[in-house]
Length: 502
Image: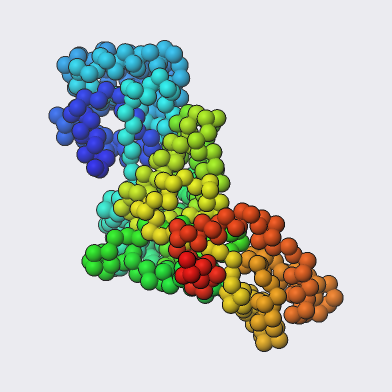
C-alpha cells in the first residue's frame, strides 16, 4: 500500500491523530493538501511554534508559541466541518502532561468529527501514554517515477534534453535522496556548466554519500576488492558467480526473484568481511555497511525509528549490498530485560523485513559465534544460503599466500617458496597469514633488505593462531558445521570429508 492509499484510508476511517516521521516537510505537506482536496476539498491548517496557525486569514498567528492553544483551535471549528490540521515539530511537546491529556481527550472527541490532526516530526518520539491514540504512517523517499518527473521538469525549465539511458542512470543514482537534496544537487550541476551531463552522476553519488553519513547509521563503503582477492572458498565463489546477473531485468523476465542475502558463519579472520566487499565490487552495486550499535538510541521509540530509517534508506538505494558485520555481537543482548525489550523489538522489525522484503537489497551478514544467533535468523527464507567459512586448507593457504605476495612483490613472486609456506602454517587463518607477511616485511625493512621466505617462517613461528588460543570455541563451530547445518564455503575442507564419512 502506497502512502497516498494509506493516508486516504485513514482520512476516510476518521483516524483522529496521525504521526508522520519525515525530514521532507514540504513534500509531505504538498501530498497531504492534494489528498485533502480529493477527499471533499477539506481545508488544511498548518501550525508551528514560531508563527502559529497559517491557512486561514481569520486565524493567522493563533496559537503562536503556545502548543496547548494549538490543540484548542480544533474546538473553534464547527463540529460538522471537515478539516486537516498539520502540527510541525509537535513531537517536542508530547511529554508535557497537559498536551498528552488534551490529545487523548481529542482522540475521543474527533472519532465523531471529520477532522484529523497530523503531527510532523523528523523522527518517531512517542511517550508510552500516547502509543494507543497515535497512528504512525511512514512517508517514503521519492520513487523513481517522482524523481524522473522532477528531472524532466528541470530539463524543461533549462531547455535541455537527455538521452534515455543517461536519464535512467541519473534517476537511479538519485534514488535514496530526499527531493530537496535532489533539487539542490541538480541545481549545482546546472550552475556549474549550464546543463546536466553524464558526469553529474558522480555529483549525485557524492551527495548520496553525504546523506548516508548524516544518518549516522549506515556507511557508504568503497568496495575495491575483487573475487580473485579471495584465496580458496571455491564453493562460495561459485555460488556468487552464478548470481552475478540476478539483479538484471533479464532475470526478472526469466521469473527469478531478487536474491535475498547470505549469512557467513565461521572463524575470525577467514575472509567473511572480504567476501562482502568483493560481492559489491563484482556485482557493481553500492555497499552499505550497517553498524548495528548505532541503531540503539536512548529515547523511547528511537531505536525502532532508526531501524525503520535504515530499512527505508537501504530500499531507496536498491539494488545494493547491505553488509552487517558480526551480527552475533549485535544480538547478544536479545532476551535481556535490561533494555526494556528494545533489542527484541529491533530484532523483530529486522527479521520481519528480511523475510518479507521484495526490494533488491542483498544482505550479507557475518557471524563468529553461532551460539549467539537466535534460531529465527537461521530459518530458511531469511537468507538464500548460510555458508560456513572454516580455517583454510593447505591448498587454500597456498592461494592466500599467492594473492598477498602477488600484490606485495609481483616482480619477485617466484623467489618465495609458497608450497613450503602453506605447509608450515597449519591452523592459520587468512588474517593471520596477512599479519605474518607484514611482520616479515618489518624484519626485512629493519635490515635494509627485501623480506624472504625465511623471514616469513620466522614471523609465523612468533604468531600463535586463534585456532589454538580459542580451540574449544572453534571446535564447537566445526562440529556445528559438520552436522550439516550450513553449506561449506570450501570444496576440499576436512569437514566435507567428515560429512561424506558420516
